[in-house]
Image (cartoon, rainbow, N blue to C red; front, side, top):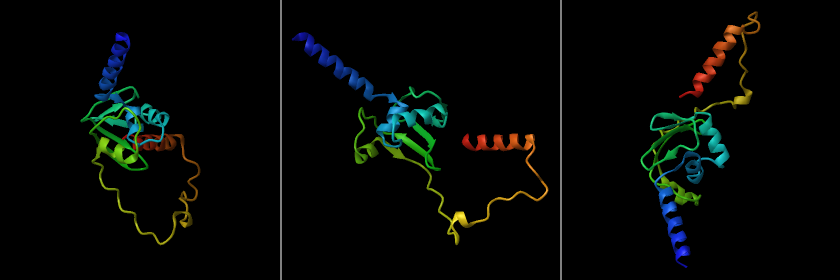
Length: 149
């Protein structure tokens, strides 16, 4: 009987120890920013997440209350301060209590007279031909630098 009480007490202390820190992927999932832990892990492994200004490349990084997360989500830069850690995924209203959203306001949408699909596609100048290898490398570097915010 004493062994059962001791085991229950040890599980409570391990649960409390988990509440002061939590894995990044798990926190993103519990705070309902990402739909699954697998997607959250992919975001972190792609080095698209910063914690207190430093890029994180491991999903096992332990977050604590007070850390600042910066990442891109749906073409918007998110700046999130962690206010709490939850051991389970809870409803949206409870998940909102885990963070303070300090993200800049999204840019207002320009009022367009035509939808995007009706606009003319980008055309190269006549006679310029295919891009050279050097131009393709520059394009690739530009695209990669756009991902690195």
